[in-house]
Image 1 (cartoon, helix red, strand yellow):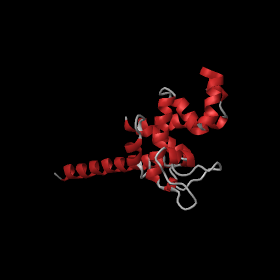
Image 2 (image 1 turned 90 degrees about the vertical axis):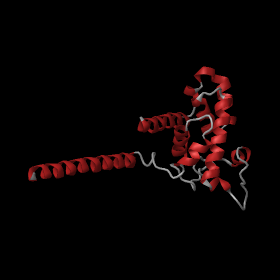
Image 3 (image 1 turned 135 degrees about the vertical axis):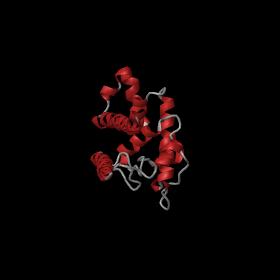
Length: 180
């Protein structure tokens, strides 16, 4: 009887050790990816994704700012989704002036970014690559190159835009793989 008890205790210990090591391994993977999986704003990505997969929109937010609501680019884009003032006003009606900048509000920033992404998704016939190029470069820069280069548009984009597209798809894949 005592041997059975010892065997059960040993078995429970081994199971506990295995579970803890898996949790540590998962946390190390999250650390290696820099927090791609971790955000307190998942409900906003889910709520506002529209026609896009929430993980896809989340991958955009990660690559734009690493989910930093206070991030500001050299071009003046702000927040998690790196929204320019004209986009914030047009897609979500955010107030952006000398007194108030609602782009720093994560919920409103993600909503605005998702509205704009969905607009681009439909504008470019549901082509996610073109949508990302338009989002990253801006329509006024991307549209002329799309007209000029047609189906070869990607090879004629700046390196920054090509890298952005590649990284968003890569991180989207990581997020989807996590759920499988």
